[in-house]
Length: 437
Ligand code: UGA
Image 1 (cartoon, rainbow, N blue to C red):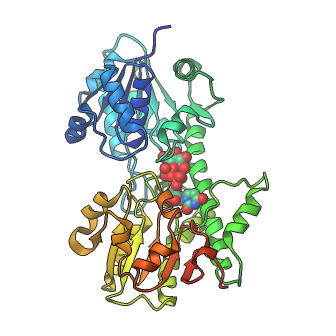
Image 2: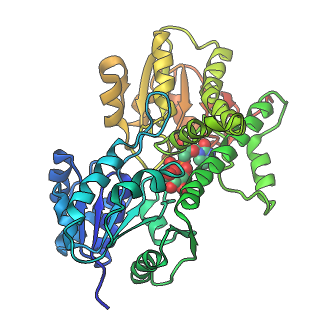
Image 3: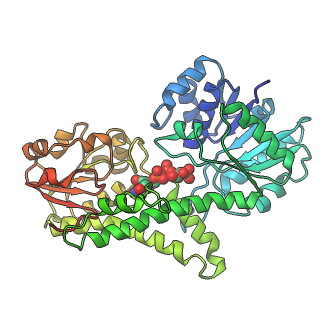
């Protein structure tokens, strides 16, 4: 069977992951983006962000001549399917910003009106419910040969390639069955074992994506709320509670890791867009506002711990281990580290930071206001306190001996709950969700 030719518009983290994975699997793939610097790097096999496996996949695809990168939208005419993966960021007041999506769809209209063959547009960008029916379709409605489906993406940063190969479900929102079948045909070529497909309408597919991310956010704010109570109770540890409740199959063990709050480019943005979109439904979004508020306040738990250790003072040396919003990425969008460092700098504290991947991105934000360390030892040397903000595997192996040897004072704040408290008996050991001993 002839393999489907695909194009992808928007080479951010989702778009590029899809592009290189398809190319490596032998699909002729055209990646399109308006950012010239990004394209130049991609053409020589360089991704502009860190994601496990992506660099190797990119290089392999280029070598096999299966992928090309261009800013020329007309190139979609060489393909059968176009995935739209442009960003849908937040406006200043938290609403969804559809500017890029509208522009791309309007450009596609002009290009596709002359295509004599069928073409399928797949909306992968996260869009608030009714965007496809009220914004996208009206622009394209005169094009008889063009179909539009909504096919939300559930992959995670740091695990993108694995998630692409093993989705828990494929959701396809459509208004004409033949469009749904076209996308299914492509997926049957892509997957050796076809995942479950849920067929629905455009708006339900859009709402599924928001519900999914809102539920994940809810689980995190829930466990963080429990963690904050545990902190007040002697000898109570939220990790034990997470383990116990996660064993109940009705609850499930994932996304019950207490921490300094969720960040990243998706959960905070999507929760905010859902809240703004539903404001018109008067009070129907109170629950989501609570989830958001818990998250906004969670960073202050770390500040409270510093205060309780009498370290929230100018001149104290604070070593921060972990800057990325989670492990296995260099992404700092909505990262707790950025909020915390801004706050500590206001108090003239002396900040040293370490991260296996996100150091360069952090430098772009804080320039010469703080010290950047490529070695853990350099970061903790002479520090009054060490705060673990990201759950990188390398920090899980931290030995009390190393900290003792290098730090000025034995204070640790484990905001990710990755250290075993009993190994740090000779430290002032504070942690999210760990009550006083
Ligand atoms: C999230 C969803 O998990 C993906 O399914 C979705 O496709 C993606 O958004 C998206 O909409 O594009 P991602 O932002 O990559 O993926 O990261 P998550 O793994 O969801 O983590 C988000 C934040 O929650 C991180 O700051 C993480 O540290 C935090 N988190 C996660 C916790 O604090 N506790 C947990 O138990 C899990």
